[in-house]
Image (cartoon, rainbow, N blue to C red; front, side, top):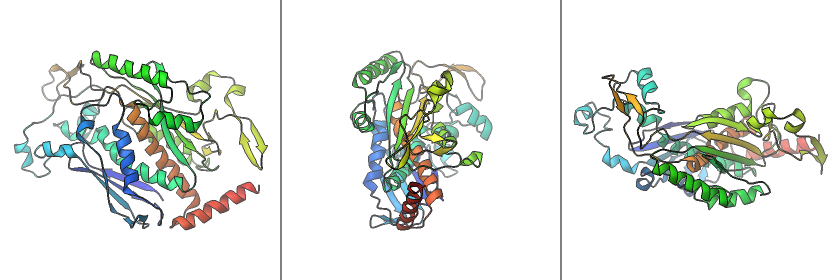
Length: 387
């Protein structure tokens, strides 16, 4: 079944992703992956690293003549900034003496620095922050791009948009999903509400002037999923649980909602559930408060997942911390950082949601080749319609 691994560090030579379980004969162009990598780097409020890197995917295994071969797909993404970090990130034993930057001993509040150093017994926090960095999500976006390509073969489309930054909340009532997607892709903050988007940019400017950062909320939408992905029979098979874990695994995400989410906890039951109807030969709902998921399974409606991202931990007005070695207090160091990365987080959210839905897809419909999976899928749809 579908699974992936990533490897590499923020300032290492490259990031690597290996994705296993994609069926043979899926059309796949490297440009599709690179496009999503570029979308991840965009967004008002991004930092200096995005001006250095121009991420491009390089497929080095699993694809031939534009078609997947059935084996693991290997993707490399070079780090341009590695040229400036060769000695610091040298993997050989002699590299430590030649490192011009020296060890990092001052943990930054809100980062993995301190907990990671204590957990792994590290005296140099560089060994923690290099892998804990959100740079790792570049490889996950590459994996997600392949998964989105697989889902598109079955009419399932995954996209995202920003619904809030700081105290500014977008209003998208009355807009179709197509309008939301189109408007978000041309917005500097990936927001479908132009007025709210402009207010979000002003809020980001305010945070920049104060030397601080801003978080927000993005929403990922999966259109046209079949009913029955996931399962109710075991806790770890429930698709809503898997989606929540996937989104929560993105760096700086502190909350996940599906459908109405926390708002549903403040409603009467009659206001929180979706009535069922039968029209045009199929079961359907006229509302989607459940976000397309009931009992751990997709119910055929669009899947709606939101992620709440905390403000980036690095502050240009530094916060108090304590040196790992000397135990002396200091003001936390500043590394290159974003003011707001919520627009980029939405693109990463697309990737992890697409992976989990594609994983559920391969579990449900199987198949070593795209043709076999398509036959299984079509047979299932026929059986559902004939119920």
